[in-house]
Length: 255
Image (cartoon, rainbow, N blue to C red; front, top):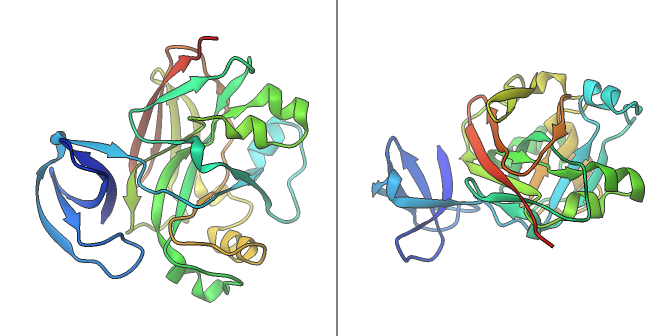
């Protein structure tokens, strides 16, 4: 099932589901019991929003060996976690803004995991009960600031630096699916989730040993090799097999 957040005409944001070319409402947010109402709204009439509003965004660094290699860094012995602010999230079709503080902003295509319910010290055999579904993420990064600062909050945290969507796919086996990033139609990244150093189960077990996961929290599982610079006017497409395509344009912020 594809779960979305959307607006229709002048309505407030609401959760829904997609049935072919139509959208139906959910009776309540999808982090508990809900019913799917009749799908009667034409898909072309709605505006898709980011499918989640997380309390926190937990990201994983260097989780693909070839990405670590391209930056000449070691693969970590345990998952390397960092946070992105929820204010960085934008939805499909929204614009990535290049901030004036950076001269090297890059794309990072990633599989995102959406948490279904509250959990701490989650056991590996219970992980699937805490996953609502999967979505597509662009972990946009100011690479020059990342190198300069040594820690990553500023480089990863600018407004618009976390495009997310277009929806949450609840029926997906994430163990071996293709991730592709295209900029202006040119392939930049192409890999499979089977190349991850740490599996999604391992990541959730590890993260939940550090912090409590809340419904709607978002975990970014790392990016494959091939990250590259974005410039004004670029059009970015990230496609993940079994989910769909996240599309965003890029615009330079004027001082």
